[in-house]
Length: 527
Ligand code: FDA
Image (tube, rainbow, N blue to C red; front, side):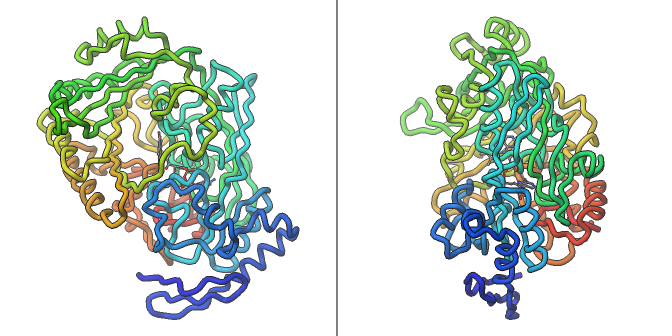
């Protein structure tokens, strides 16, 4: 299906061509509708950014974290709406619905496939950049966090009040709470406490009818679905109430790098048998990438074994020496710090000052394609060797695979407790990432990661080959851009992300949004 945008002018009928047919799109009507509802002209100028607005591009680009979807040919939204009040969100839903625009909700803009800011049909972005409040209540060990805040803003908010509470969400501090909690949220506290969504105890949602709902008024089915069943599907989540978790004032982080010449393959092989059984207080991850070899001009592949222990170094060293002596962990590989500093350590940032957590642009933006696997059986040494060797290929110059140990608390939560099903029996989750700088070469790099993914098919989980929704991969299948998508069609990707929970998600979607107003390429379709 081909869609071509011919002209874009505010307050005019826009002419479009869809599959060769010329259509008139009431763009002006949409803006008129929204302006009337917001009514105050100074507010309108702070909330609605049309393509004629000089700030349009900077507002659009401010939360684009994948340069692949920021090219001159990338379809652009007709308008970006940055609500300041709940009523602005309700009005945007009302006007988009009545004037035929698809709505793309954006919180942190880290969607790997860019679906929060790109669509192949006329669309507007609802950008929650002004919904960023974080209210931490240390007495009751809870926080209310608005969706547009980043994990970093939440972590900072907690750490500026206490050193003994934390929140078990993702490693990267620039990801948005809205998208992150809509898909699960796994990080360094995951083995100890499970996912971010396992700690959501209330939420504020605006549904397709503009109703503002809380846990009690939305009911347990919908409340179950929004905790990981996918963003842009059940409504706009404005804020989440989360339960905080205890952390010690001092944690220990470490990195031990081993390359192919230093037995990386054998040590990684051993790690698979151990990492998921280690005490819950110890999280480990392996980062695989190409590096310079000690021989001048030569490359090798490095497995970086990294970890975070909820305790001091003197307790960690004997523990690792006993459980995983092959790693050869020494005191000089370890650093003691606060939990919040460990977020910066894993992000590859200086651990001081911690207010860099408030910087939404602290990480460089490149073009990226990602894929994920969950592994339930240890790989053979030959299998690992083949995997590592793929990183010696030219296309893997800027590739990395992040392999995170599961087990611990993740093993104790039932698969259907929440939509995210990848729990008991998972040894580790792998996120394959390939990056490039020149868009003209995109195909070569994407082809490489697809080959890597094919190679891993024999080692990954099967029937279905499970995938993590938070790293969306449109290669797995998509909905129809417009019109109806059958259950069978969506099951192709839906079962991989949600396993048996997919059916319940479809039933809930059918009940709460039967007209499929909230939709994207991989949103849950109604029956
Ligand atoms: P974005 O705003 O792009 O939204 C993502 C999806 O959610 C879109 O479909 C969007 O429409 C929808 N959505 C957003 N806000 C919504 C709202 N308020 N209501 C309803 N729908 C909404 N994951 C992980 O578990 N652990 C990790 O450590 C990391 N680390 C990481 C690092 C980097 C660099 C990237 C790019 C990604 C990750 N992730 C991750 C994956 C991350 O959790 C995932 O991309 C999230 O969807 C990002 O949320 P944002 O709000 O930033 O994205």
